[in-house]
Length: 593
Ligand code: ADP
Ligand code: MG
Image 1 (tube, protein in one colour):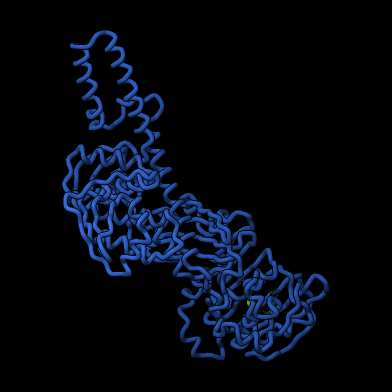
Image 2 (cartoon, helix red, strand yellow):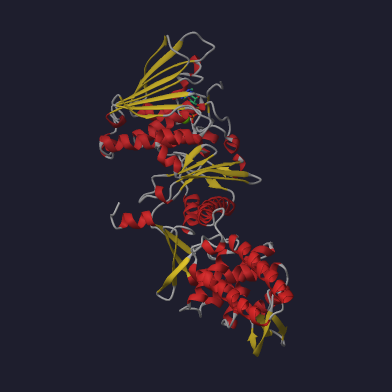
């Protein structure tokens, strides 16, 4: 157990100053954090009248050394840091040495504590910041602190408090949030003697979530986990069932510290938006473990905000892990569907895919007829083998599809394909789908250096600014590899002779300029993957515009192409290509169930 020191003025001045005692919930947050920092395994919180009348926290931590107890209530008294540099390797939740002093200034506090080295404890009492008494007492190892009549001497503060129930609600929320991040500690919260929270010590966060919510919530959770060189992201995200109209069920923890972060919230929500368009806020519990040197926790007095050295890195890592988990989850549910309908023993013909059956059977019947009439026995044998092989390839390719067997019902608004599979209705954004099909194909061609170009009937001559001309010259190879055949035509003029065939007839000048702008903005040091990804995204966006009303077979082949993509579920810009409605959801909407 470290002893308490008083931070020197210089260090104290560098620590984010401000109010930590805003309301009962903030008092409780500070006190629980102290209990956690003291290695407690059991923390009991009791409140009366929304915490305003009484807050009592009982822990079984290391306790406070008897000679330090009085000092603990001084400003800048802390056992957690010695100098400002320690903040950058901080492992404890506290470090300001301000909480006890601020709480004692606006209430009556009795603190009793004992460390294991002594067989007696000490008790101190403060009222409005003044010491009432200090005495030896018998006590268990650990600390009990009681805060009576909070804000008794600050009427202005009292006025800002919400109703007793609302304050109790805020307390229960903060205790839950802290409990989630500390699964190995058992928490109990009693509101006017009624137990409202009870978690058990467990190495598994999921057990705590079950204690706090219920089993059904756990069933709707998807685990996330990624590890990088300097940080790890892990935790749980909720499927659609857990999305809500508010952000209450969003919890973010950095190195075990509960924080609020617009950056991380945005990264999560953006990842969700690629799959789910419902206007609700997703459920998530995200833990980020990062080298303490790469963050600054000293930006907000209540320590609920953190500054990151590299925002983009954090955003990307969180986005990617949530996106990956959601994609796997959705693919998983599609695969299960597929297995159901393609189950063992069911032949291709038995599948519920009438339009496809037709498309495939037609040539067989036709060939049979032809072979029956004109082919010799040997030729028929070869023909039969060929047919079998085609069928095998067809079925193999089909069963690799990431989508279930879809029956197309029609098209809505010349934009969305409506299709059904077992008890599920699918809406496919045909433009997004087409764009994605083109994108993956084009990216594949670029990766393998085999982009097919078409010669323009009339070459396009574009005059560039000198700066843009140099940027083009620097990136000549990139244009070449992506299927543009361009020649330099005088000082700052280029002549586009060939373009990638996949593009159809895009507005060339604006596409060329767009790509140029992008190359300019990206600067150096970007990986070729990102550069080519950006070009392909732009090019494919420009290419799909022309498509609208589709024939059944066009829709069919688009869905087959889509199903065979690496990632059919989002367009190149991250928006969903497919929305699924289950029979259950539809029946709920019609209030049948
Ligand atoms: P900080 O947590 O920022 O150090 P506080 O004012 O919250 O400052 O607490 C002052 C000091 O009192 C802590 O550094 C710690 O040494 C001691 N302390 C407070 N609460 C407890 C507790 N529940 N168990 C053990 N020590 C505690
Ligand atoms: Mg503290």
